[in-house]
Figure: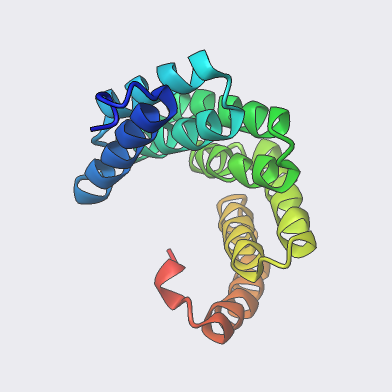
Amino acid sequence: MAEKAKDPAAVGRAHYVRARASSHLEAGSGVEDGERALAIFESTGDHLMQAKVLDMLGSGAYDRGQWNDSLAFEERSAEQRELAGDAVGSAVAGFRRALVLVNQGKFDEAEPALEEIRTASRAANYPLGVAMSTMHLANGVARSGDSESALGILKKTLAEFEDLGAVRYIV
C-alpha cells in the first residue's frame, strides 16, 4: 500500500514496523526489513527514524550474540539521535552498548555510559531508565568482584522496580 502511494517515508515506516513485529515474534529476526527501512531513511535524511532502525538492528544483533555488530549499530544510533537533536535518546541509545561491554567484562568502559544513562534518565524523569541502568551497574560491580556492594545496589534497585510495578524488567 505504501509503495503504491510512492511515499518513501511511508515505505520505510512499513518496513520498520514489519521488522519490529518480526523481532518480537522471534528474537533477532526482521533484519532484512530493518536494512531496507534504514536505506530508505538514510536516503530521506530522517535522522530520528535512522536511529530507531539502528537501535532495533542493534537489539537483534545483541539477541543473536553478535556483540561487535550490536556495538556498531548502537554507536550509529546515538550519532543519529544527536543529529536529530535527541540528547536523552542519544544517552539511552548507549544502554545496549554498555550491556555488551559489561557482558564482555569491560566494566571500566561500561560504567561511564551507565552513569550517563542514569543522569539522562533522571533529567528526563524516566525512573525505569534509572532503575535499569542502576541494575546493570550492579551487575558490572558484581563481575568486578565486589559482591557485597553489588548486593546492596541490587536490593535498592529491586525496591525501585517494585515501586514502579516493573519487576518484569529485572534480569
